[in-house]
Each structure stands twice: as C-alpha cells, then as structure tokens.
Length: 267
Image (cartoon, rainbow, N blue to C red; front, top):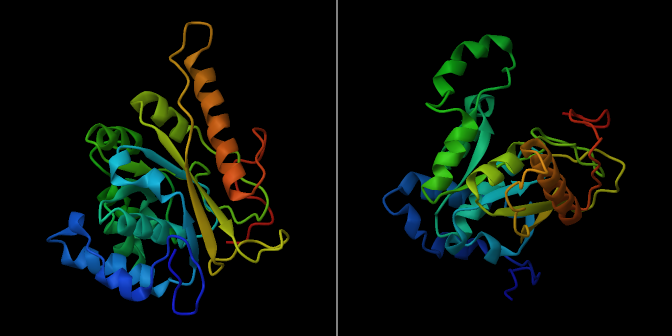
C-alpha cells in the first residue's frame, strides 16, 4: 500500500503525480474530459480520504447499479470523477438534477460524465425553469437508465433522492433504484460514504472530508411466484438496499423515516 508525500496511508488514493501519469484508455480522444477528471480529483484530493472495495466497481463488473448515500453536494462531482479514474476513464453514468447543470464550471464537470438528466425538480430562481425543456432527454430517466444498462454501461442512483445533511439518519429514500435493479436484472453495488470528524450533532458540510466503501449487494430475490406482489417485492428489495447502505455509511435507516429533508439539515 502506497504512502503519499506526507507519509499517510490512504487506500485507493494515489499521489497527485500518479493522478496525472496514469493512463485513462477509455477516454482516448477526449482530451477535455481527461483534463476535467484529473483536475477535479487533484483540486479535491484532500476531501476524499480513502476508497475501499474498488474491485466491486471494476470495468469487468459492468453493467451494475451503484447506489450511494447522499450527504453533500460535492459528492455529485467527486464520486463520478474517482470512479472514472479508477476505471481507466470508463464512466458510471449518474442521475443528475438538471438545475445543477446550469451552474458554471460545476455543470461542465457533471456533464463530462454523460449523466442521466432528471428534470423533475424546479429551478431556483424560478425564471430558470423556462430552460428546463432543453435538458429533458429523449426517454424518461429510468427508461434511459435501463437502456444504458442493456448496452453494458453502469449507472449511479442516489436512492435518498436529495442531499441529506443529517449526520446520523438516512432518509427513507425512493424505490427507483430497487425497481431499476429488479426490472433490468443488473447487480447492485452500494457505496457507503462516511464523513470524518463529524460529531453526530451538526449537519454535514460540503467541505467535510469523507471515505467511501463499495460493496456488492447479495443476489436479488427470485421473480415473484404469485404469492408476493411486484410492489411488495420492490419494497422488500428497497429495504435490503437501504439497510446495506446504512450499514456501510454508519447512519441509521428506518422504513418509516422521513422522505424529505430533516429539520437539522441546512442547505
């Protein structure tokens, strides 16, 4: 295991020099995208402290559905960038809210990962909603995700559906990731994002460093035999998925928990 220039052991985190030396063969001919990926993980090199279980997200595992918890905004840039780097430039295509694409620089960073754009949420300020139609895809987001999985590409979904800054409790989450897995038959990999230095009483800030652990979720349940409805099967798989993420990230989860943000959350 390598040590960085300060002598620290940081699993999965190469030195800045290696970030710029390592080949990214899946981005051949995409000079600007290679530059963005390397720049993002260099600038935020200290924020992502450790990456564990990288074998679970290797190119040889494609296609899969990656399901992380979501506690701060930089995750939407940093996790895809590190995934691309460790996969030789091959992307994991995350679902991304269209309004983030409106933000200069940040929008360009997100677009370089060819996201699946979701246009459900309104923009702030409201006058920006006039541009929403420009970002809508040809297919609805989950249909597009199924198409990419069928093409052998991996996709990423944040099941909580929004940034949840609560330090100790996950949101109830949405069933979309579980339904996508059951519809497509693609395996699921959970990503537990843990934050360093949080005392469990204060909201998670955008600048807090974190670690990530990737774990394959055990095999999906067999198709319904008629005794369990499709709705119940999806609910059960969502329960398994959220429980696994909860264990990996160190936050609690209850099926009757909040679906929207907690009062402690400050955005």
